[in-house]
Amino acid sequence: MATPAENSLTFAHHPHPSPVAADVRAQVLANPGFGAAFTDHMVEIDYTEGRGWHDARVIPYGPIALDPAAAVLHYAQEIFEGLKAYRLSAKGSEEGGIALFRPEANAQRFNASARRLAMPELPEDLFIEAVRQQVLIDKDWFPTVEGGSMYLRPFMFASEAFLGVRPAKQYKFMVIASPAGNYFKSGAPAVSIWVSDYTRAAPGGTGAAKCGGNYAASLVPTAEAFSRGHDQVLFLDAAEHKWVEELGGMNLFFVFDDGSILTPELTGTILPGITRSSLLKLAAEEGLTVREGRYSLDQWQADAASGRLLETFACGTAAVVTPVGKVASQAGEFAIGSGGPGQLTQSLRAKLVGIQRGEIADTHGWVKRIA
Figure 1 (cartoon, helix red, strand yellow):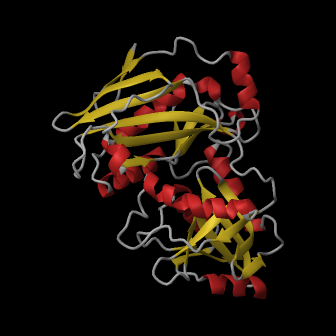
Figure 2 (cartoon, rainbow, N blue to C red; figure 1 turned 30 degrees about the horizontal axis):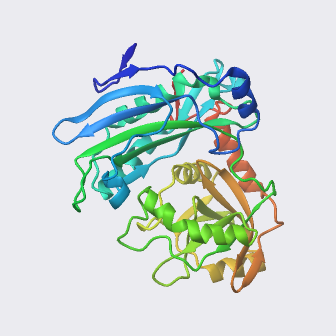
């Protein structure tokens, strides 16, 4: 069986000959965690210079055969995205079903990353169709736990075998899926973060691209944060090492007593989060003053101590909206608010999740029903 994508590529289907048994799958779905289990299938599309994208297919999940000289292994030409599929509430959306949240924004960011790493762009409709194909073939993998979703990981890497330093001429685009529960394991009402002495990204670098190298550089500081008992790591700017940028995998927001919200501005060293942009829009619609600008670690601590800062929260596809309760560094630590989720954090999270799951009217056209 094959189905056409909007750009005329046809997806060949090769169902898994021995998918995970239903009872085993049920055990996984009852407690999926995050990124620990994977569904039965994956999507794969090839790119060859001069030919373009070709051979779109849905195949059994399994190992990838790579030549030892594949460019990705030597020069790290690799990018990825992260988005979720949600089961819509039958009550809220009248029909129920399955939907994606702003997949076109993921497709656009994916191509921005591709341009920065000298990789071919993927047509947005083909990106979305590939994700749709992945969700539909493994739709029985949605978690049964409250708040569960299907996390989707589209990625592309250079597959050409060569050792010269230049952009590759062959690539693979793939999509895999994982049933997802809670991102953080601590269960605390708010997360604790460690301020790293390491730098995540510098001006002119790849900070705004979603590429594996950025995350590889964050692993040592993240491990340091974990070893000190914290949930996440915070990176400051590379030039002055004083301005708050982002966490290891999330953007930050600050809520003040005058009803305003601040988030670090996008300067090329911060990943432009899709959850971030959604929350900016929702907060503005609530009548709040929303600002994008610089915010120093020292000012953060002073505002927390004076009570001017009421809440801090992190946001991203995986963790959605998560309150920050404590910040620690070599110089000491400070607490934020009551140490738990604040009123605005809870309100914005509830509205965002409600839209994603079809429980609140989507007035922005963000929800794309696929089944």
